[in-house]
Length: 146
Image 1: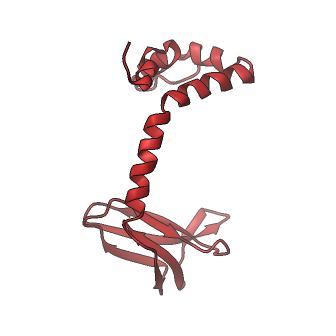
Image 2 (image 1 turned 30 degrees about the horizontal axis):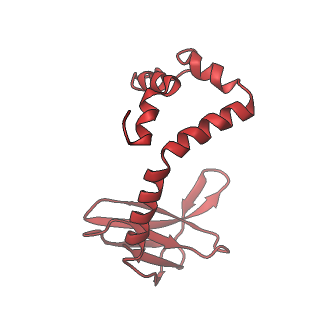
């Protein structure tokens, strides 16, 4: 038996069958996954027990990732940013993580795109016809470049 609990997930019959089918393009329809369909129709307590067991096997990994992310987040403090047009762009060199805070009362939300050299933040407004539209108004937010 292996010492790493998460390796038990590889031996789980249901998860192994799902993994095999998800690797096949278009192989994740309900008729392709009869075991999953059967499992989904079990009692709620049974399903929850399975999920809790799977997640418990990942507990150490979750705690490790939380610690690493905490250290990354502590690398930078939030700075107040103001834009005139709802668009912000900067260099991405050396960044591992961007953190953005927008006032809860704000009527806009950020979308982020970029790569390791440059990133941009464009603020969007909700729009009933298209779901969202670009904001071209003055925008304030807080940004931490970790």
